[in-house]
Image (tube, rainbow, N blue to C red; front, side):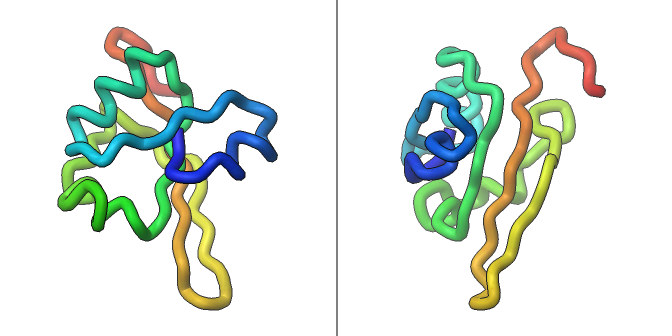
Length: 87
């Protein structure tokens, strides 16, 4: 799940757009569509204010963080499903 389809294309995975909703609604939609990864860029706070502050370790596992030479940031999380054990 990401804002743009490029990440899914290069990962050879289906793309699901991040809805412009709150933290809980995004996770609910992601889980209902069986999404495994959440890719966030700098627009997440604009489209879902407070999203980053609401992240819980029982919901998301940080896999990687990227920054380019302009300071733009992209973060990749794995979504944890209820009843699933963290690695």
